[in-house]
Image (cartoon, rainbow, N blue to C red):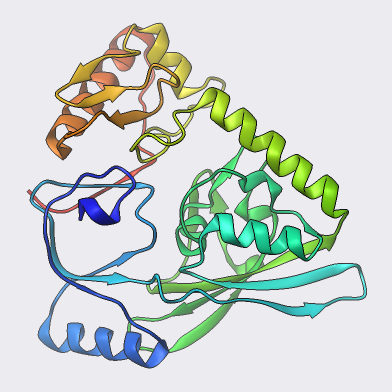
Length: 283
């Protein structure tokens, strides 16, 4: 799994499948149900830590669900853009910019896929997925495909509450904009990200959710853990809410580091940090 995660960490999966269409995906779910095999859905693997023991059951890799299309152009200057779950956010932003569509610039530099971004309500200081999403397409575990209107979805900080199933994609409501202004904003936000975060280093993005009123990275820095290291897992010197893999870090190293950070911040600052990343695997 280390070859399929941005952390470059993770043990072996029992099996990974790459469905090409809805028929493939429905058949996989049917077989898994009949054989009572667990299913884990993988996007770009950017917000997860896979344990060293790997993943049991079937890992469904949605990278072939990669279509983007302009669905409609409304009278109120809003254009509906649909992107499948396996589309990278970078590609989606570039597509929108090329078509002079504004509204997704906040996601500049956020790694990962559309499916993962919807699932996590991904965002930055400048916005979040909930601000532009109009509907989400899903496949229920019995193979039925449904559309869920954004008014029927409960969004919260780095979380989207959806029915049990697989996110197939989402429709985004964007507005006509100036191509140069869109690209300039994307470039500016990307530069800010590069200046403040360890962009390019193997990591899973922000490890902890920001508590109300203060950034998690600030708390971690205040308790003196910036640069703290276990094995090849290190609290980033550039941004303390990132843990980076300096070479051959194991999931157990990262988990030990997480526990130390949580305990120190709780003891010294009285704040309970909550994970933003998902820990995958058993044992």
